[in-house]
Image 1 (tube, helix red, strand yellow):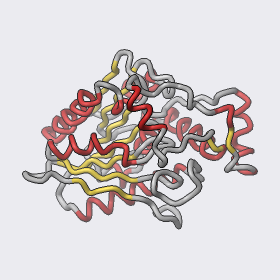
Image 2 (cartoon, rainbow, N blue to C red):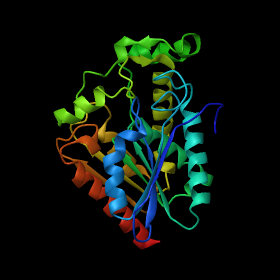
Image 3 (cartoon, helix red, strand yellow):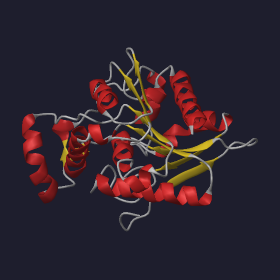
Length: 276
């Protein structure tokens, strides 16, 4: 792994009968954890897909200060190592990477590395963090300095806790009452790392060649659906798709229409497998 810590891995989840069509590896978003995707995993296994999930450092069941990410490049490296391990344990089974929000940025950067891209048949990005702007211009200016001198400091001015991420009240209650979900103000180093990976990806859309499916709600106030459209428009990938959901919010797989969205993802993977 990218650093000396213990990461929490969920899975595997596999169909009880029938051949496995492929494996989906879930990389969660900021402040949450892989276990939140259990319903999605059950639907995947019912459609003959295997599922694994990984909690980043400082998230879910993994080691580290809750909500603190010293480097998203470490998370990218861990994603590649996890993928390699799964492939070695499941030879010949096609693999896909799924990333939500900042996890989507992690997955997209991971797939920009040739040795990782060749290990996947495609990636799925929901509400990816691709054009992230600081809460205030001064934050962007001082973040690199503060991330070095006070990396664990909680910056209350950048907290997006009050922004609704789902139109389902039960889903919101479940998320924010989950003890494994970090609900405190964002830590300075974590925020700087998100700005840094977002900036890198925005500069490199033209060099994206991995097959991908990007999904975004048009009413998302956490990440920018127009940035997902830019990715789709500029990427050099020969096999790429986008779906924008009118009026949907950030946590697509926790919206009232979650089964429709999950089915869109399954349909895309099946379409991709048909072409290889």
